[in-house]
Image (cartoon, rainbow, N blue to C red; front, side, top):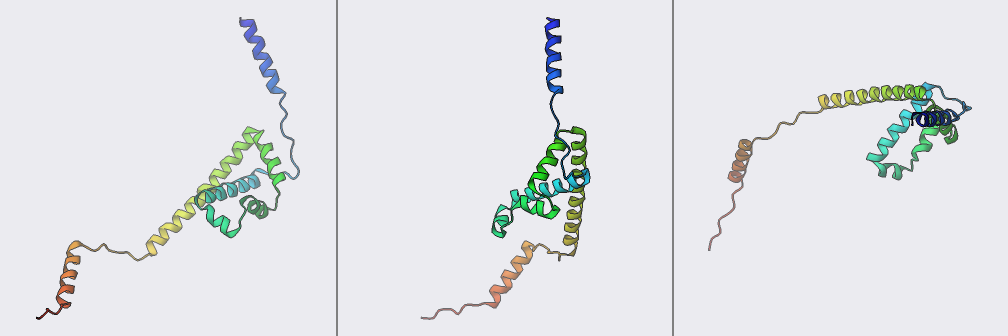
Length: 149
């Protein structure tokens, strides 16, 4: 039984080691460029899920927008993506850079929101007592003529 298990293990390991990795594409995107492209892909996909109608109304095609912004085509992106996906350590490095870039963007947006909140005029809630006083004043000012017969 152990011999059978050992033979099966060797066959499986041998079969897996023969997997060909994607060749280095031409043009090749270094980890920084690939991270920038993937950051934009994540951002635009997130925007699409929350506001698809705006993209449709403006005629924006998300993939084409990203490719045009970075001066690449879909085949180059696919080839580079496959290259990194076949190399786990490199792919993790790219994803770590993407994560860092997204955190910087998040912090920037949060800071802008905080500044906007500080600059916005503060609205004080109207108390019930104030509403009663205003209603009382309004009713004393507006008097309806009494009907006479």
